[in-house]
Image 1 (cartoon, rainbow, N blue to C red):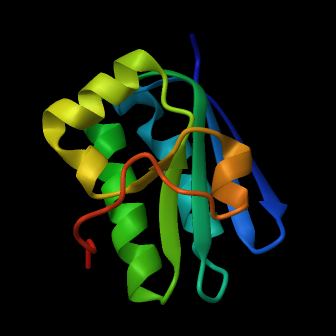
Image 2 (image 1 turned 90 degrees about the horizontal axis):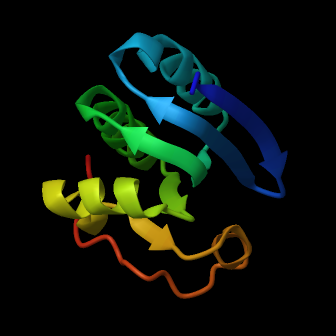
Length: 123
């Protein structure tokens, strides 16, 4: 499935919805969307992964870099709606501990309790 990325503003959040598979061949598209989202002051990024069915190491690297850059600017970066395969990849790599992960988009937007609280700031 070709990668599709939607980016929209919702209150203070920039929601980046990833649809399909994130791999090396689609890295530039995701990187471009992240770079544009990080141009705001104190960016609050929220990655909606409800329609993402795979992510490789290049995609994981981009998410980690996005989080690091957002935190350096005084912002935040969180994930929501992980499907089973990406959730497993995040757990195997230990990255689920590096992000606030919310079960639903609505809970993330309402600052609900995350199912996984980031234990470190990636700075």
